[in-house]
Image (cartoon, rainbow, N blue to C red; front, side):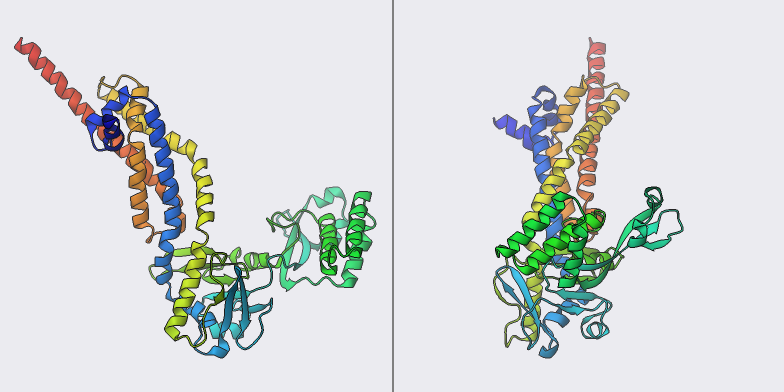
Length: 441
């Protein structure tokens, strides 16, 4: 057992120990492979979470914008925030907590002058995530001319003519209000559809009569039935809903349009993008579910204390996503298994080819070579992890998504080539020694 431990943990540093792999079981390769996967997973998670605190500290304009909104020295300009059972509530100082859009420096000049620092934008919108969005539906020709027609005009076209147009939605940025008149219009349209749809309408009406749902819930059910039957699927716009949601407006209007340096604060989570002093672009998300209930900035807090409260709130919200990051990267790491296997095979083939080119016959098969190279796998993961974490504060998130794999393969291939060089020299010495002994005889 002692020899086995020496082989597993020291073969990366010892030529003789690594060469023992040729005589050992493939189980050692599988063990090293499993350890490498765990290390790569930990590397991805660490690279995702560890640098954010450093990056945040090196983004003074982003922090200044957050301070201007939530820790403003002028209390009358401040947006007061509190966490209540994992949800965020906000209000203008002196006002009442309500579900509302409180700040939008993208569109409101007054908000931009109060809160935006060096072009950073912030939105504080505490309306629920399932708030319906007002949209305008239209169609655009796909012949390169981008001819725009209304969706109503599109419906008058023949089936063949419709193939020349693509469906589009424009989010107005307003909340959709389901008035009684609007609901009556939806019901009129649904009444002309198939019996299954009519049965669904009757069921919702019965639920309303029995007080099993509220009038607002009934109106929403009718609207969703109408929307999903009248319009095509909107998976290109909404990934979690069959109808347009107001929360998505911010992504379509700003993020997907290329906006950078922003901070969105919603009732259930936050998201932001900023640039550090060193020029590194950072994006982050955060949840409030693990945050203690209470006001963000307590009454009588000094300016430094208020700033510290905002800093802690943002960073704690980000770190509350650690379980989600861990799960997401676990799935990602498992999906990379074929590529890691390919790296092992490439390194094996490279090393075996180098030995054959040098006429080295001490490693007699590709299988033996694979077991030797396999003994380098897990420590290559260690090297990748250390180098990735060491550089994570200086490179972008996009680079970090591929850097661990690149470092892993470079380390594995380099160590394998070193083995080939050392084995070639050793084999040459053995041949020379044999010739000398034969000559001496």
